[in-house]
Length: 121
Image (cartoon, rainbow, N blue to C red; front, top):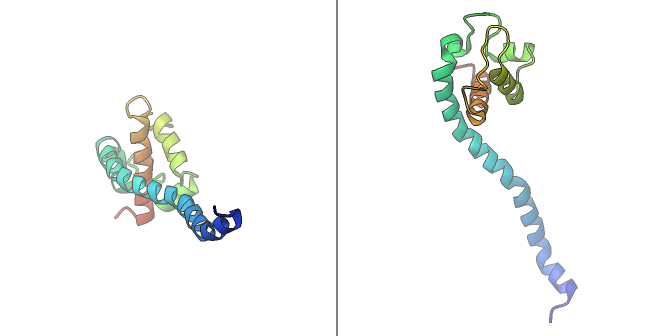
């Protein structure tokens, strides 16, 4: 039989690799999921949001655009904040919580945030 010390010596390098992989894997999976969701977010945005927000603009309240600096100024520069706004609406913006699935709203929020980072090119 093998002694515990012998097994520890053999397994030690693999333990670190397994731990590293287990810590990194969720990041890679979530990054891939976000990338796939952005495409759906773009479709949902085009169908439901672009009438008022084409190109990241705002035809109702021009200073409250979806551009990076405006999102930061208005405290809306996170997926959670955008998701809340889309779900519940505010002022002239209607609530989409009853019209869109939660996953579609989250996809739109990810799309808006990613486009704001790219300057809505």
